[in-house]
Length: 166
Image 1 (tube, rainbow, N blue to C red):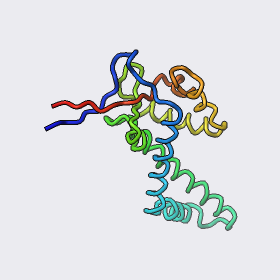
Image 2: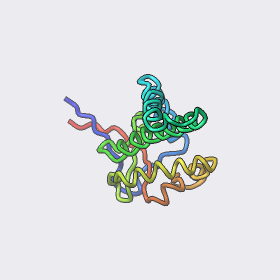
Image 3: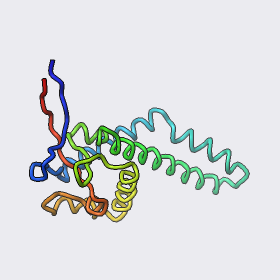
């Protein structure tokens, strides 16, 4: 019976960094999965209505609509944050999308990153996307294919491969 084991190469010269396009593919898969789940379960609309009604039912309709939008956006950000941070700091070291395209998030010494670092990574990625994705574009032009956020938080996204062991 063969057991399939995923691992990142341990030696620095053998580690293969993940390129921009693989990262983009993983992001599209992850965004699709979370968005589908949010839509299918209808957590966001019903949750936002419930919270808005409880907190702001005595206000005018205009304020109610703005509060609804703020709460709905907050719920979406929290769900995406937990999805990315929990999975990237778990033993899997990757979100579902990263795992499907064979990528893994590792620290400076190939170790698993902490939840706090994964959280910082998520929020800095949002900030970078608001700046037209300039931080992510670094992966297109650097030799080690690291983004600006990778360098700031001292982690890497690498490719991992299947190794057959018996």
